[in-house]
Image (cartoon, rainbow over all chains, first blue to last red; front, top):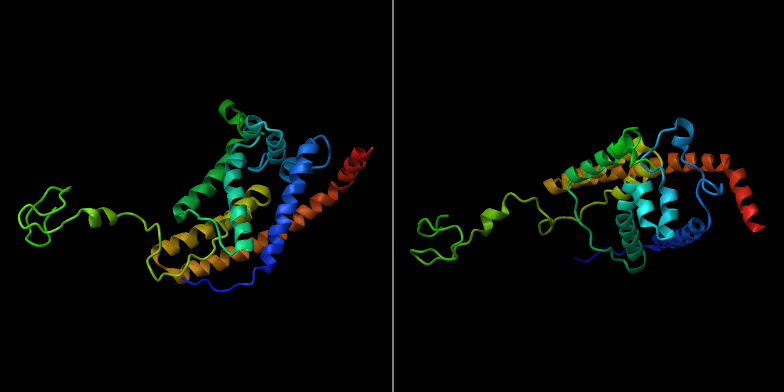
Length: 140
Length: 130
């Protein structure tokens, strides 16, 4: 099927900005220690309520990851580190679309699978706030 | 299974009918209950469900807004798999709208948060220069 000709100029700018931002992010994450340097702001929800959100611990996890400590990264935010390869793939697919006009092959999820994904995220957010043992492993 | 030509009962794994030799195959039966992995020929492409954006919003910014976006993303795929392309397109528009709402509200909140921490961040950058 012939794909309609689309103007992808805006997508190219966004994709290029994304890649530049990611490069700067990696350098900053490598150089500075989250929570100590003052460079990365803390999670607003945790700062205001003391509760962990599903994303809490991401900056620290990424800091560990760029230093090659995958285990520590998983320990700080299991969900986010599991989702990271998929997010990188989605980003790569977008970059491919912006510069080559073609997305990478994607898996089709059923509506039910997407619902499950949402429930898993909420469940993760709730469970990591529980003070009992197996759940404390999920806390950042 | 039964031969479509003469009606003779054959084993399920039989390639041809044991009586009349007509080619038979169990494939059509096995294919029925599966959800369509690819759209039928002539179907429009699945509209964008903005799932990645929805998940990013849920994890990094505003959980309630993100959940709304995830629900619409699910609706896009459910409607599309049902063959309801107009419904899928409609949900896609809703998903897009919520992506922009999240982007606006989330962007605003992040900007405020960075302003609050601006002094600390400036301090950190200046400190690193020495």
